[in-house]
Length: 320
Ligand SMILES: Nc1ncnc2c1ncn2[C@@H]1O[C@H](COP(=O)(O)OP(=O)(O)OP(=O)(O)O)[C@@H](O)[C@H]1O
Ligand SMILES: [Mg+2]
Image (cartoon, rainbow, N blue to C red; front, side):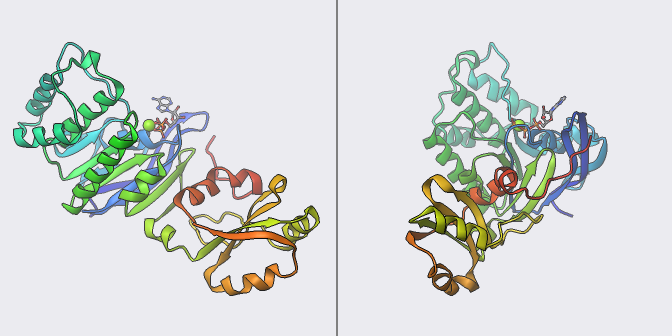
């Protein structure tokens, strides 16, 4: 049994909106990233995992407990950071934390103080007069103050400045070392890449790829930017190789990834094992320069979100 389980979760809001047949699981001690842009279905999935919403089909479980029927137990067990923070007005930060601690059966004062210091928050402020970042920090302290074993974080750094984003990432890395199970939704590549062991990409409510973060870093593809001297050679090269097409779940693709005619630039992906054939391949063309570029999580993600359109890649089925 995994710590967090999502099995064929479907919630259809109509007009292709919602989540469809979403499945993934997070093992104990694992950090799992849920990556997708606005409206992809991250919060919908997370709300089901937390037990706030009943699935139309499928099931979600935390520590073996079905979410919807164990909503209260789950709230007590999980450190949850909602995507949209709605704080009650007329309270100071300290009063809000006190209220949350009471709901969860108490919190260790030394731990609360440590968190306030780490995230540089003055809890004496009224929630009403807090900035967006302060509200986020207060919700972070509330989510972590009971030292929960499972952390479910929905776009945790939205509203935080870059320095605080890094403080958050470092904190999550520490929590991971302490054996916590973490589900983190985000559209920030760097944050997910730094913290997560595995990642799912969600698009239009469907999971389109699940992979180990290391498989991006140790990808068997290499990428090169080729700059041509003239349009004729650019065109000839563009026609000589296949274009990269998407295959579900496959991240090692070889061929032309993108064409940039204005700059006479081509982005080429080749397999590691074929790297030594590159000079041979390029010898028949008039090139200004070429250089290797790192393959990143963003590159991989963009294959699903950008180049699909350019290259007519696989269209993921959308339910009507
Ligand atoms: N209660 C609802 N009723 C109708 N449609 C909804 C509801 N909740 C979400 N949706 C729709 O479902 C889709 C997924 O929304 P969701 O909030 O899960 O996206 P998200 O990935 O969290 O996006 P964001 O990054 O903006 O937070 C969107 O098209 C949204 O409009
Ligand atoms: Mg959301």
